[in-house]
Image 1 (cartoon, rainbow, N blue to C red):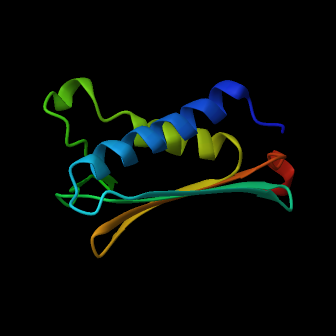
Image 2: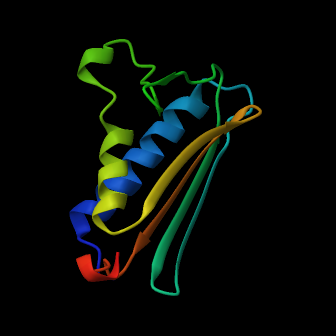
Length: 114
């Protein structure tokens, strides 16, 4: 797969770490992950339950960890990885579930194609 191992590990690691941490405190402890490589794209969807709904700051969900100054870089980094591969990363709350969807292109469009 033409995605750097470090980028793939950072994307998956941050998404799963956040999901597992949120679901651990939920009554319905659930994390669902779907990964698919198809049509020149990697698609990742992670959905998890949570006890407390996350809050948004400046268009991104804020960390809920105690030492917020030392945390909260994961989603921002995942956005950067998706952008590096000409893709997107979307996050939203649907009822009592958090959803993260990332799409990365296997071939980043050249400047003349954008």
